[in-house]
Image (cartoon, rainbow, N blue to C red; front, top):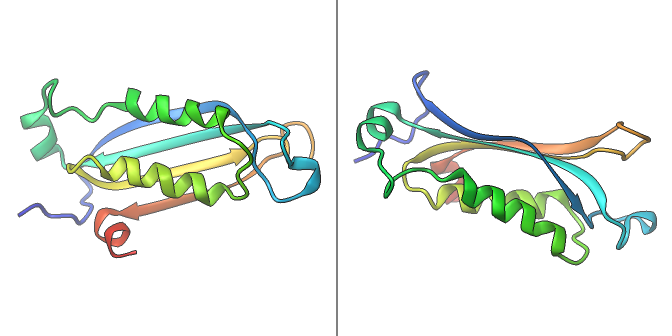
Length: 131
C-alpha cells in the first residue's frame, strides 16, 4: 500500500511560469478579452518508488500538463481561476504515483502592467480524493 503522506524526501516534477492568454474573470472589462496569465505546477512523488521504477511507460510526463495548460487559450470565458486549478489538480492526480501537487495561476496585469493577482493551492492526494 502506498504511503500518501508527504515526507521531506521527494521528487518534484514541475512546469515553471507557463504564460498563456486566458479569457478569465468576472468583471465586464475582463469578459472575452484575453489576459496574460502565468501557470506554475509542481507534482511530488516518493523518490524511493518513482526513481526505482521510472521508465518511458511510468514517467510523469510534464508535456501532457503543458499541452493542457496551453489549450486553455482556446476556451471561451471562464469566470474563476479556481475552475482551471481544479482541472489541473485532476490531471496531476491521474498519475497514481503523485503524492501531492502545488499549482498556481496568476493574472499578470490585474491592477496595472505587471501587477498581478492569483490563486495557489497545495493538496495531498488523500485530501483531493476526499473533496
